[in-house]
Length: 413
Image (tube, rainbow, N blue to C red; front, top):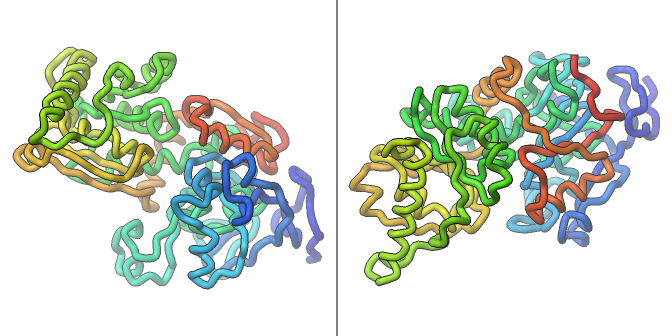
């Protein structure tokens, strides 16, 4: 079968027919900087696939903060990192969330077939990794990477290269753009809340959710609610209050009503007393929202440096602070007296494995959670969408951009 040179976005194709080249949004090292500058549309070659890979004809893509970092070249130059591993490309074609159609499959693929409509989770690992072959959690394997950030040919391409195990069935009641925007955040939130027994959400458990109006936080609110828990949302703007209540929050706290954020002062200093007063006031705000003196069993963290001292302070005896990022910084301070004496757990968490992605995707298919898509942009606005995220001016919930889909609302059945 002949391969056309290049096909325009949205142009009809027969399943399995691949052009030689494709449209993609890329970053190059000489363009590192703010997203509006660093992300540019280019024509690149359609990649070859390995025996366990598939090519996805991307209908729409989600937008995530990891590719803000990719565009900045900070904290990691993902291009240089891959080149050190022997990969030849001098560009990064990113994107870690998508919906689309399986268009070509590798010789050893038997779990999806050409024509399947899928969403893609972003956990990637070497198929021959001994840890994975031993049946252990792949997300703890030495070879694990974030697809579309630490790997190339992500969802900002007409044809994305993924491993077949990443594919999950697409919820048919959602449009292409709704399907594209949720799985990275949802699967990350699910692992944080359900992946670290015995600290999993159970009926009536209080869960404190930072950044509750964002893509990750809105998923955490809904997952907690679906499991019977009681999420308390933390926001930075009272305009976000109703959104959080709509996603299942039983209470909402504006962090700007407090001023003790940042690294915790030395416990021997007079400043510590003032900090502790602020932390206790924040804890009381949780009680006020709940209507009872009950502390969070789980604190869902990602700001890190500015908030972690308080998160650990207010966490319940025997509870867990679980964290997946450090958006305010990476240095950690906390009062260990309250940590060890009250036997709390501080747990790092990252993305999800196949089982966790499948579980949260089933929740979406069963309509227990919603993708919280707040804005959809065109393919040529990929840089703009990242700039909004970089500047913290993006809408609530999640964003998406169309790729091969020609207009919003397509795909829902």
